[in-house]
Length: 382
Image (tube, rainbow, N blue to C red; front, side):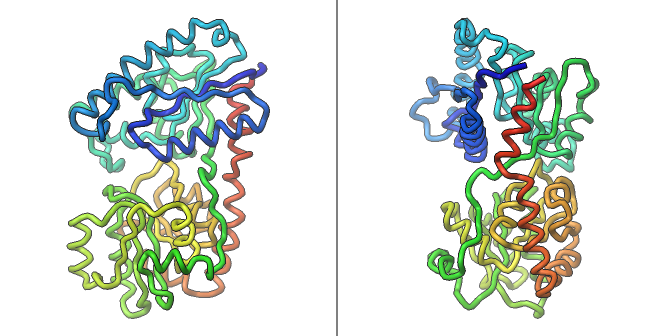
């Protein structure tokens, strides 16, 4: 079947979901490069207009009105237009958390990307998701899952995510008419090697001394990101390495700060809050190693971002991290600080470090945006 046009359904802008915004932008640009007509529809802001936050308090509920009441009506009205009733016009929901929109779109001509089922599994009581849900959150996630399982076309960002989704489905992808595929994420920004001289001004602004090596962690303060393990790892390394720890992303919370102090590492920790893109690239490039001890992910973008910048990676041995690294990182039990410390000490060996860096560059070719777009288009072609 030919594909004449794809309408991307993006996220609600006030929610400020940066990674999802970038994912939709990647698809938009990639499809345009293949001469496919494409549009991006985002839920407009009506009820929550002027509110600072739509993720908590009254603003969240006003956002729900915009997302779950107003936008479905808008979708149905737009579908009355003859242009969008053509068999060669398809719709793609860019984020599985918007699966309820499937009920307002032509099911046979609509697909969705499933980035993870962490929140869904957390709401269903799976402790290994590390995503506990409130009472209303449980209702929302069950509603999302119910709609997600109706999708005829699903692009799962990893085999691990696909397996977890299948485990939640009674019919799975083998039901007639379903096309559930693994379509890996691509880079959502440019991550490339940067000469050390160019890194230095960014590191200086971050408060990182030029004569001190550092390990890097990038991510939020969510429990599943397991920031505590980075400090535990350095504590286990002891006097075999005297560098710094750099946490980039959200600020260090009180619990982690107390833990760092209890280990006597307070003077060896630097926090870089929400670095801009070039600063992040510099941090990846100049670090001794990127440490990614996450307990739960759907894909794990930071792992390949670090590799693309030439950083050796020590990551959790919990899927999908090994799947994403494809054997080009060192993997250890994210609850075993001695194992993580041993892996990090291997990175300090020149031959191992060099091998990890070169293999990391090769691994990154799997996540080129052209590969994503080709497989994405195949999802809609018979």
